[in-house]
Image (cartoon, rainbow, N blue to C red):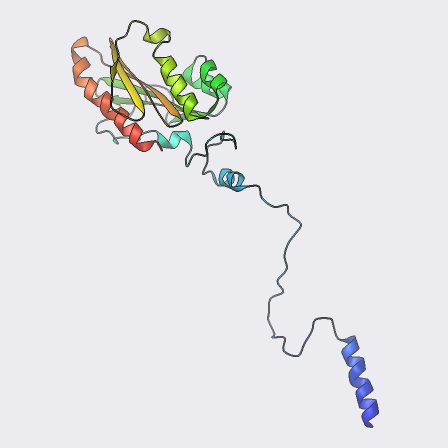
Length: 224
């Protein structure tokens, strides 16, 4: 075959070859494509919400917490002898993230906390022998809001006439004997809580008091 004809044939084959093909392409090389049909995910907070690593109610205006509020609630025997009371409330920690759900759990108004701004709420009931203890834990949107609710708890109706003593725990904590119930209030960072610990006989108040203080310290150690 003449050289001119050979050159023309080779040129024609080159023009017909698919674009991007070359002699050094290896068989079996995967065809990697980038899918641009899906919108990009939101910021880090949105991705964390999808993974469940931030409280459902957390907004970009409030603090991003590492866990949901119910995950900070002490578990059975974290304080020796205290376990969930199956005779009070529902089994498991009760948690709410809307005003309506929270009010259903506490069976009352949640207005002050909702007005101040909250991310969520959790409640748990415990028992140890004849003693009972109920924990109410609010995750507020700001630390200032948590402190404000703590200060309010010292002057609201249920605290009237009580003589509180300070408890060295978390940012602040107080405790009072409202026979037959120890009432303890405290806050840490953007969390505020109330504890109601009941004793069946007035003579058992002193026996229960150390456990109430220990519970406050346990909770404070778990909160961020």
